[in-house]
Image (tube, rainbow over all chains, first blue to last red; front, side, top):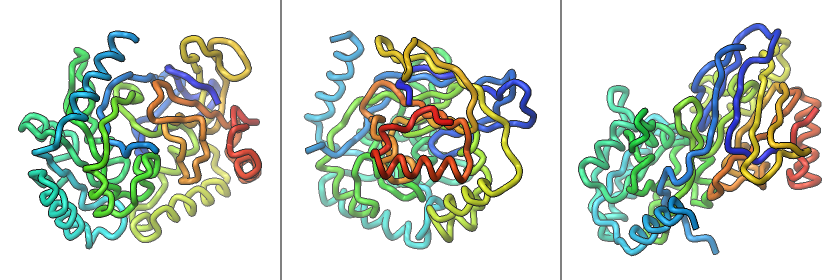
Length: 54
Length: 289
């Protein structure tokens, strides 16, 4: 486990085929060795109605 | 306290003193199981919220009119609350995408208008994370007692996510789940597909990852960054993914995500992972070999 704010993903060198990535349970795109997926945290991006924690 | 945190706190306080008067309830009639009961459940939830003094406009997602467009319209038409009934995918669509100029985009992300959810999907990861009842009407009854919280979102190549993202094996499973099986078996369809993929001779390509640590915190094992290859990379903002609270470090109200890298995705490795979960509550799960 690594706490993070940024992450880069791609298909590993020497691998054939296409790996996919998903967001919230839906396939969102494909990775190849030169098609990166960059993930980051966007602070204060949403107001969410949440039950009050006891 | 940073300027951004002050702004977030002001938004929360302003919203907490507000009593919702106008809300739009967006629902996906094709999400989850029990779809034949969806219209009836929506009517019942609407009736309860109207009795609680909230004027409700109902908007149904159609192939031509998706969640992002409906959420954007709701905000533009002055909704004080956007309620989304559907699964995690439906909720994701209603977040919308940020515009390239960095301003608030379509959907509810980047706006002050709060998002409330009613669990109408298959996995309902976000609803479980929030501790909401998994019944649509019961969850609607909780809305008046909920409070707005400003949270961070993840973003993957420009697309927001709220609970989880991943690459490699889990995306392969999601792509392979058959719609009919999902409708019939619910979460069981993911279990069946996972087993099929684990037993398949076909292996997906390995994924190369590079993680940059949260400011001031090193990655597990030391250093400011870590890189390697894995068959499965999971990015968690919610503590549960397979409904078991497998990722206890992850917290939706934390401004970071947690990255779990599994070098191998095989039956043996998943059994080992399961044992770790049972024995240690998941705390020992990390880049695994």
